[in-house]
Length: 505
Image 1: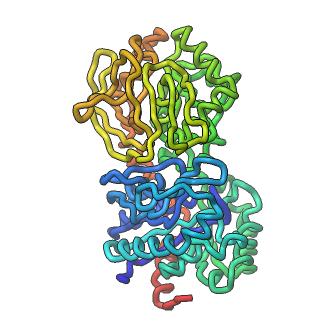
Image 2: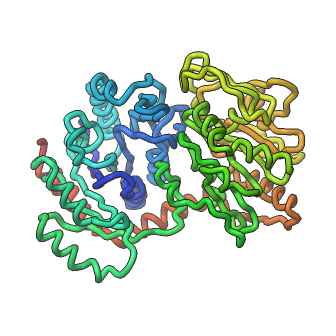
Image 3: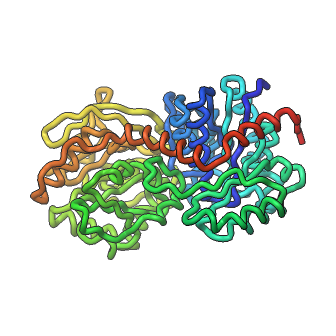
C-alpha cells in the first residue's frame, strides 16, 4: 500500500469533539500544502452528506473534506449506520443501502465484509493523498465490543497510524477518563497512543497545570494540547447529542422566533444552521406541545423514520398545536424531507421499510401522498424555487426512501429537470420540499425571512450574512484556534517518528 502519512484521533467517549478536531487538522494540513483526506471507517449518524456522484456518507466526513478543500467520496466513510428502529439500523455501504440489520446480527455477519471494505478504502486513499486524518468512534476501551470492533484500534493498526486520545474536560473527570481509557487498552494499543489532547477547556489554564504535570508523570504520555471551548463555530454538527445544548425557551430580544420540532428520529437537523447566524432569528428545538407557543416559523425537519416520528407528534400533542397555529394564520410551517411527507394526507409503507404499520394519516395540511419505497433517492439537486411571486435559483440534496405525489390540486415549489419538487399552500403559509439545505441558499433565505418580517409589520433586512462564506471563515478560525493551543510541531515530529519505528502490531 502506498503510504500517506496517517494520524488518528480517538476519544475517551462519544461527543468529546473528535469530529471537530479532525476537521481542524484537515484544514491545518491543507493550509500547510499537504493533499489531505479525512477517513472514518464506520460512522453511526442520522445526519448524512451527499457526494458529488449522489452517494451518502456521514456528514462529518463531508464537512471534513470541505475543510481539506477536496470533494467527498465514499472511500472517506465506506460504512454508514443509520438507526431506524430500536436495535436496528440501515447499513449503507459505499453510499448505498445494503440492508437493515439488528446489532447482534451486524456484529456476527458483517464483520469480515466490513474489514475488507475498510482495507480497500484505506488503500485507495493512501495512494491518492499525502496525509490521512482518521477519526475513531465512541471509546477504544469498550471491552465488551473490542473483539469485533472496526473503527478504533483495529483501524489504527490497519493504517499503521499513531493515535492521539481526546478527553472532554467539560464533562468533568477528564484525567480519570484519560487514565482509565489508557489502562483498559491492550499494551500494543496503549503503545500506539503518542499523546493526549484535552478539549473544551474553560477558565484559567494555570489552575490545570498541576494536573497536566501529574498526568504526564503518571501515564508517560505527553499532553499535546489543551483546546479552549470555541464559541459560535458555524460548522455542521453530526451527532444529535448536540441538540441538548439548544433551548426550547423563547428569546424576546430576537424579532423572529423559529421552532424546530425535535422528534426522536430527527435527521439532517443542520438544515436550520443558517438561521443561527441571522441577527434577527432565535432558533428553538421543541419536544413537547407546551413548548411551542406561537412562533413565526415552525420547521418539521428530516426524519429517519417518518411514520414513528409522526406518531410521536400525535402522542405529544404537537400535531394539534400545529393545526391550531395554522388556523390563526400567524405562523409559517415548513417541512423538509420526512417533515414534508408528514404534512400530507397519508403515508403508506407497503414493504414495512420503516414500520410494521403500513399506513398512517398525515397532518393533512398539504394535498400530497407518500409511499415509502425500497429504493433510496440520494442526489444533489438544483432548480428554480417559485414563491412570493419570485423565482430563486436553489441547490440542495435529497436523501429519502419515499415517492410523493399530488393527492389533489396542488402548487409545486421547485421546478427541476422538467418536474416539480415540493408543495405549497395557496396562501404560502405551508411549504414542503425534499431539498435538504434549502435555507443555505442565501438569496432565498433573505427573501423568506423578510416575508415573515412583513407579516409582523417589520422592515426588511438586506445584506444578510453569506452562509457559505461564514463556513469558510469558520474552518479558518477553527484551524487558527487549534494551531494556537496544540503542539503542532511536536505532533508533526511524532507522526514521522512513528512511521520510522515501523510498528505493525
